[in-house]
Each structure stands twice: as C-alpha cells, then as structure tokens.
Image (cartoon, rainbow, N blue to C red; front, side, top):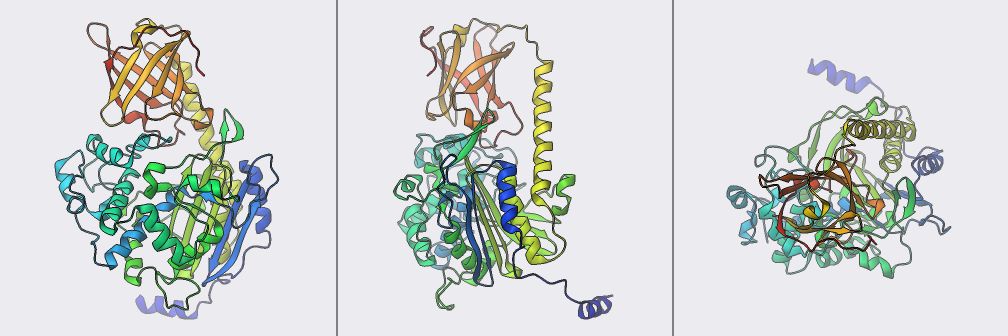
Length: 529
C-alpha cells in the first residue's frame, strides 16, 4: 500500500497550484466585509516567501472622520501579544537564564495558586498553555474592564481563584498566568516585560511604531479609534487595554510592523532584511513554540462554515494550532472592546496573514483571512463574508431566543423579599474584593470598587434576582444579580451571571461569590450619573 501511495504522489499533478497572488477582487471583499459587519476600518498584511505581498489599510480610523486607515495605523492586537511573551521567554531560555520546565516557584518564591500541589509543580511552560486547572477567563475581572489593581495585587490574588478542573487535565483559556510569565521575565532579565519586548523584540525586528502601552497611542497620530455597539448603535469608545496585564494583551501594532513579525516567525527566527545573519531566536526554539502542548476539542462548525472543519486543534506556546486543506496553521486571535485581530501563519507555504479591525466583529477578520489562505492554497473560492454573516446571524438569533425564553418564564408580578434598603451594603469576594450597593432615588446601584467602568442600576427581574444594567452600554455585558437569604431573613450571599450567552467570557461574573461585610447608610436621594 505504501508503494502505491508513493507512486500516486509521483504521477499526480500538483494542484492548480498554490497561487502566488491574491484574488483580483480582494479589495472588493474587504469593502464588503466592512459594510456587512459594520466595521469602520480594516488593515491587512500578507507575507510570502520573505516578501510583503500586501500591506494596506481600508476604511477610516474613526466613524464620521474621513481620515483613512493606512498600513501604519496602530490597532490594539489584544491576545496576539501572547506570542511576544512566548518569544521573550524563548530568548531567555537560549541565554541559559531559565528552562521551559523550570518550576515557577524557583523564580518567584512568593507565587501561589489555590492548590499547594499546583503551586509546587506549575512550570514556566504551564503558564502559557491554558492547562492549569483554572476556568475559562478566570480572574479577568481583576483587570478587565480597566481596573486599579496593580500587577502584584493581581498575582497575589491567584491563590483565591479555585480550580475548575484538575491540573493539566484539560484546556481552558486564561489571561492571568501570562502576567505571571511577565513577572518571570522581569525577575530573570532585570527588565519589565514592556521594556524587554520593546528593546529586545520591537527594535531588532524593526517594528518601529509598535508599543506596549495604550498611553503611548496618544503620542502617535496614526491610531485607529476603537468602536463598539451600545444598545445596537455603533459608536467610538475609549481604548481599554490590559494595562495591568500587559503580557496577555497590551501590544498595539500596525500591519506594516506585523509584516516584519510574521516574516521573522515564518523564517523560524531569522530577522528580515539581514540576509540570514541576525536571529531573534533559534530554529530549535521556533519548533518548541510551535509544538502542541494542550489538546483542544475540535468542534463541529455550523453549516455555513462547514469548510473550516479541523482535524486537530491544540495550543502551543502563545499560539493556537490547527489544520486546513492539509496544512498546519499556527495562529492566534485577539479581542478587546473595539479591536479585533487575527494573525495566521502557514509555515509550510512560508505564508503569513494579519488582519486588524477597529470594531469587535469576528467575521470582519475571519473572512479576509480565509480568503487569503484559499487563494494561496488553491481550490475553489468561498464567499466567507456571506458564510460568517450567516453563522453570526444564527448565533445571535439563538442567544436572543434564549434571553427571550428567560424573560417569558419569569414571574414579573413577584416582588423582592426585602425592602430595597435591606440589600444596601458592601459585599466582598475572596479574589475580586469589594463591591457596593447603594440606594439612589428608587434604584439600587452596583459599583465595583476597583473597576470604575462597572457601575450599573439594578432592575428587578423576579423574586430576589435583579439585572445590572451597566451605565457604559458599550460593554454589552448586563448581568443577573441574585441574593440568597439567611434563616433570619438577612442577605447571606450575592451571586452574578451574564444575561446573554454572547457576553465576552472575560466578564467572569459567575465566578464571584459575594458575602456582606458592612451595612451601608440608608437611602441616598441622588440619581445615577
């Protein structure tokens, strides 16, 4: 059988052949994507065989402003920052300053997880591969939306995050352990993660405009303004970065800069334009970072996206792995309020694609990316804009039906067990800390003490459950707030969970368990501002 297969491989002609150019109507595809998904601006880069095939901006930086997006326009790339953290560690491994399988506590003696065994055994590798036992997005509310917690406070709170599964047993995406990775980099190198990435990665690769702080965007004129829908209406919003968890998601970059980054990656560490004489990292470390570490479930895509069904999926070191049309893909996505990014590498074809947007719509980054891959892999073209629109519409309809079902089954005539003043007070969660409930006019108002953006009025739902309607409607994260009572009739506990199944997982309200710690003053007569 092996000989027959070998013969077939010899005599069969190559597929119409890995094309070397983009579709003639690619610009039209981008325009269609922006219109379909209501995205003001997109930037795309394609690199092939060490050369830039495309680096271009489409649309505008800000709704209502004609200033165009260019190849140098900066966007928040969110979780595509994780690969830079992995490279920083790989460079330190090469310098002999640490090993991938060093225990974290050997570098950070004060580090502590909820479980003593996990604390003792967690390695540098484990920090990057989402198998620690923490739940999906565990602890994200410590820094998202923007909070006042310091890096050290966040790391110290890890000990209060209970596991959702056993150690190294399953994949569950987290951000918080990338902050610990940044702390390891700082301890071993003597430089903060931000300085290390800027000096040791951006500068040698030639990423001249990229930054590791949203504050730095203020000094650059060429910046895409983030946008989000507030109660269905698209509007410009302020940038919201992981300022106190930079190693997970804080980098801002352009497609011109990401072209250099992708060429370095595809060349397994060789810096472009150096004739192979300068490396950022070795070929051995490239293979290490692209090796599967944690198995991920392969889900069956919806009918419109059936062509994207993968045969395998895994997480590597700062990268996700899967296959497409017989090729291994190395990539990652990134999302922050108002920004969405996708970087995808096809090492076998020396191909890389980056798509950046200033509106958090999945189809706007996915459709152009798969269109590029199809063009360079050969085979029939697919209208990925239409496919992702159909998939998004179905998901949205399902979520709306679920929320409508909850609304239809509630007892709208029910009343709270207690007068509103009885719910007023300060409540504490072991890992987040304090929130307060005050009565203002005829409403209860919930405030997260360390997250200025999480302020909302409570609207009665049924019995002792309310809905927090956040003042910032662009968060799209309204949450149920439920109270349980003690035998004496006093409030014993307050729990939360997202209303819509489409709520971003970083709003991990369901992991909070609040208990009252202090009774607040009675009714306040002022309204919410």
